[in-house]
Length: 297
Ligand code: SF4
Image (cartoon, rainbow, N blue to C red):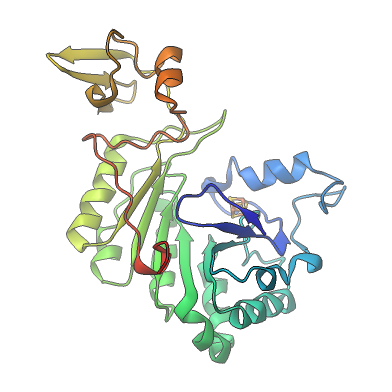
């Protein structure tokens, strides 16, 4: 297992690596880029390095850590990709059941298989469910059906990971049923990152607020430079090409005029990279988590 910088998790555990494209949220898959980079090294196959591969030597890693950890299960692929053999899943399930002092975060874009696997292993699932967070990744309205499938799984903690959020999303209906315990929102980072609109974010936050669901806003991700910064007294608003407006006055360093979002000096002095920039439009931060993911719970 490896420590992770994901703020609501402690470790990643990858007894499986690899996956294949399933929807547009996968277009800039980071796990695929890493697999290609390590082609023929670190256990990645030389030919087709991103194919689903079982890493038998990593299976027992949760046993090696006596401290309770929040563990991301298969961050470098998708546990429920169709090329992951059932027998691999069963071995991983057994380790999670046996190492019950950890909390396991299982995120997929294939909730149908997650559901059927859990239903087919009901006895083991009853032992695991108290320390497993089930999450579906939803990038835009086109894949909202994943939310419905997740709600059908009998679980103690269900979450949405809206990352990378690449389009508008109406989660009000899905959240209002009381079956979702947390929402993560994040923009896409990296060279090819797609811009996330502040309007999409505001709408999800509003819907989550109405349903009293915790929101963890992770990052804006990729940002195009502001077209202009409008100053109004002590307030400054950055205006973007997609008509988004972001209030920026809170972090405006003294003496820096109208050089905020695209300014090297600003980034350096504030120590904020665009990928990790996490202030909301209203100047607040949202870092709420369901109980199962809170540190020390
Ligand atoms: S499901 Fe996840 S791991 Fe698989 S290709 Fe898509 S983004 Fe990558």
